[in-house]
Length: 148
Image 1 (tube, rainbow, N blue to C red):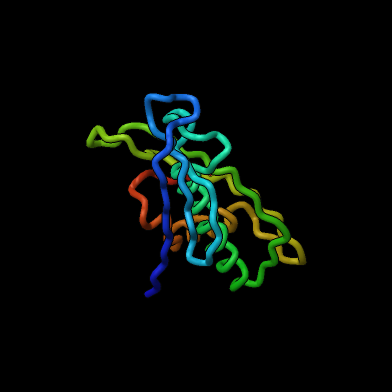
Image 2: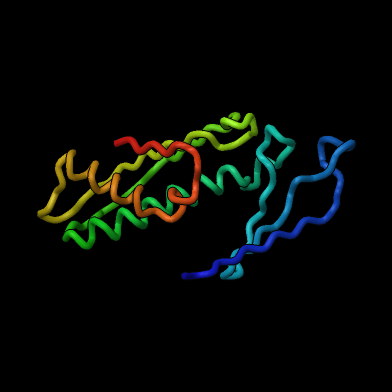
């Protein structure tokens, strides 16, 4: 087992465009000391120049899937030259009527190098295995779809 930490720090300030409410900007400090400006999504009075929790959730899911995928194909002798993804998340109401990320779609595009090239069926199996073994995907209750 492993423990991971993240810290957030928010200080009360007025919203720059909505004086009757508060700024959503805050600092996220990751366990390695890296800091990033975070806010709510712009639709919720957030700063469009900052990251937001929904986007960070998608980034965590896509990153975890990619890293798991890379480990799986590497163990099978494949060499990945490049990997890209454009994750999409849908915010809506869940079965209990609460706002939630209800659906995520990963759209990975993988380029292989070397003599071994998986066919479409093998590639699909690699992604299915990566999804089954991804820590973040195993944590989420929403549907996670993988295209490609």
